[in-house]
Length: 120
Image 1 (cartoon, rainbow, N blue to C red):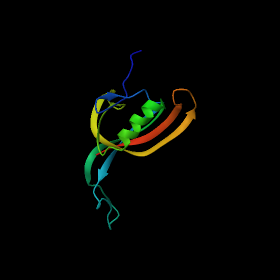
Image 2: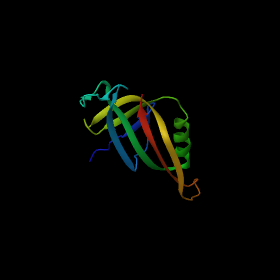
Image 3: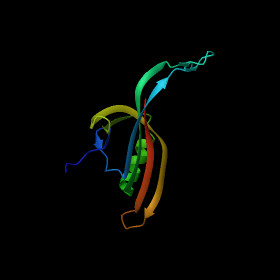
Image 4: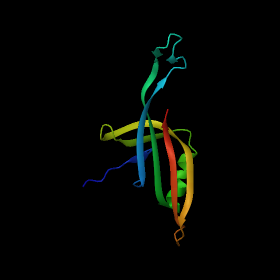
């Protein structure tokens, strides 16, 4: 079986994630919704905005790298799009960043890191 590169940040390949979920949503205008007559009005501003939820078990070296990416305002992300089974690219930012120590070792331990990538 061929190896799939799930995520690349600014050209740097990330380790294989423990969990990986891609979702797409449409962005609607504020005035979308139900009218006074009871019909649904939907004014879509953008179609297919990606959100990616991931978690990793990483060493202290990767913990530092991921924390650095979290602090950036914008990241160019190449990701494996599960709808097309191909690589896609988008400018994204990280939200909901969490890190937790999983195990101790002489190399700085193993860390569980999870976050959500949101497309601009």
